[in-house]
Amino acid sequence: MNDDKPFVSAAFICEKVLREADSVVSAIRIVDTFYVSPATTTPAVKPAAGLQITLFVAVRKKRPEAPPLKHELKLVLHTPSGKPPEVENANGVVSVMEDPTIPFLFVAGEPDQPASMNFVGQVIIPVQEFGGYLFDVFLDGELTTQIPFRLLERKDGDANPSQTQ
Image (cartoon, rainbow, N blue to C red; front, side, top):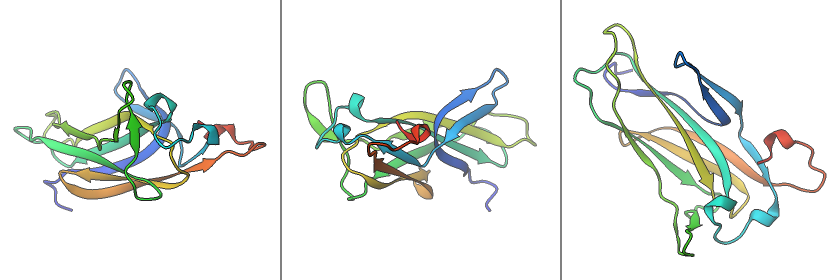
């Protein structure tokens, strides 16, 4: 591995992330399957009607940068059908969901300590179809990993509320 390049050390979906006073993070309830009621499935769903998830992506670099360089983390969502998800704003305008790009710098640290950045983001997924979804995780324009997850239709009697949103 190139010591000069940052890398993704963790990427997943969870219920929430706690950040303690000492800056240590704890991911709570890592999830890859969500059971959703079919009533929330419509051709274009307002963001409030979508599935809210928490994404966690940890980026590391073996050595800190001096001076700090700008890096970019980009997340691209793929739906089961391959169609881009659509969202409806408050004015009723339907548009394609944007793929977020997050610029960041590594904070300068001790010369012998690794540099790190933790991205924690709340994302609302429009529930328009059931099946396998995927987030591509790009770091500085290069695909570095993927985060797969499933949205399944909740049937009456499904008894797994821990995975239900």
